[in-house]
Amino acid sequence: MLKRVAEYVIGGAGRPLGVIWASEKAYFDFRRRFPGKDEPVYLRLTLQSRYPEKNSTELAELLSNCHNLEDIMVKAVSIDFTPGIAAATRMNVLWNFPSCAACGKYRALSTSDNLCYGCRKYSEFAACTGCHLFWEDSPKFCQKCGQEVWRITDGPGVPIIPL
Image (cartoon, rainbow, N blue to C red; front, side):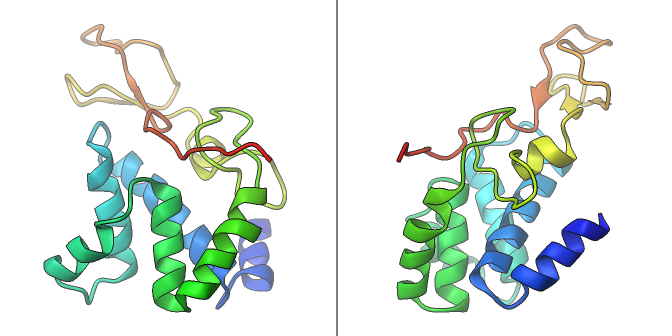
């Protein structure tokens, strides 16, 4: 924990990388808090948590071109800095991070390991969307109703473009 805080303060606070890390954390925290929702719900909550002063029409306008977590990260960098910095961040930073070694759906945005935030922080999290129970021991099926459980990385992910 202290290592991640130090990494954020040294390399991220007040920089585009800090905005990216904060957006990734918010996205996966909302996926844990509200499991089994559609992807646009998580994208909206992530952007809304970053910019609580924006009203619903402004948020809808910002979300109009966002289809995945990477788009939200770039949009946040564009709002906090400039669109030019956001484009450079996407091409020079985001595309250079490898995909997560565990799920392969999201980028491993850490300088210390090769896991996305969801796999690093919530690797054992599973939720039943039928009876709304949470399991921290990562079973394949709900131990109450037998339905297949929802994982934190069950989302669509981001398109990983091989370099």
